[in-house]
Image (cartoon, rainbow, N blue to C red; front, side, top):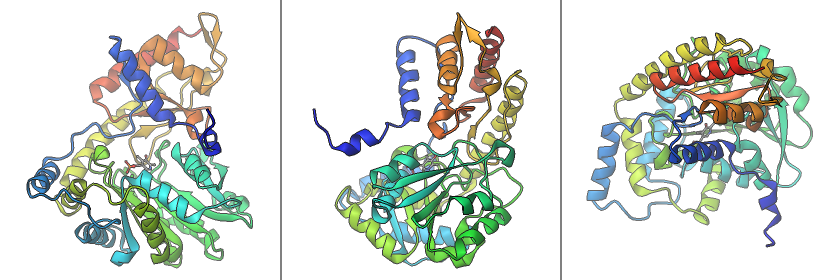
Length: 397
Ligand SMILES: *Cc1c(COP(=O)(O)O)cnc(C)c1O
């Protein structure tokens, strides 16, 4: 069948594929421990669910304005002011069906053929494809493990050409957990100040930060960039609300208007009920967030230590999010049943088939020396899973 050529230009999300494969093995009765999930394992807090139930009972089940209700926009504006010291008007905020949808709409609004978009690697799987679907060209900037997977100002400078339209920032990062300090962002901002390049700041892991510095994004680090920064955030990760599908962007009125226009012709408004739940999340007790973060921190400390105990694996300490990104290239060249492991895909297949542990190959994020493990799963699962990985590695010839 002939499909539009854009279909062939994108690949399906690899993280969703590995979750599906692990689920299929479980359905066959295999006891698989999953480190693949890109979502909190906690339940959505009760006061948020109650707000949604009340919305349904009150009949708040119709279309809303395309870019979100004023009530939700005001909650987002208040959040950005309190947490980020950034001020926006309602016309500078748009709500979409998850931050992924926000990024997709934003790419459609900003990029076309010939536009280059700088994406630091390791990157979140969807960035390159979202850029490609808009007709743009991803320019991958490879960060180094020794730099904590953070781009350096000179690297950013070297990646800029006359066609550069935007840079995507994501800290804390999925998959590495790397978090930029306010000072590091200031240095990166200095590279962009005298250009007309847009900064897209994916702040989805803002709240899940372990570092000893406060969260910052580019607009916070250097106010001169606020008019060229589009802040993207959502409720999925901070409030364990991945299934509710609410994300948002704040930025220049013209770009936000363009996103709304595009959204008006694809999804219309995000779900009315989810919008009510998100108001409760943003305006409600924030202790639910700190409780989840405290739990993530315990798991992170355990999993980093346990992985570093395995000969051949080196696991850097993440500054945020709920992933570790260990370097497993020390095991490449070793073999099992006569088969040599030479890359991250072969290694994760060995772990899945040979040890019933689901992880994601680093190649999906632009680094074939690493694998990604999500520790959004119980400490008991983490202990058992890492024990299995250790046994599997010991069996390699
Ligand atoms: C999970 C995630 C998102 C998307 O979250 P939504 O559920 O679509 O709001 C965006 N960026 C990164 C880096 C993520 O990990």
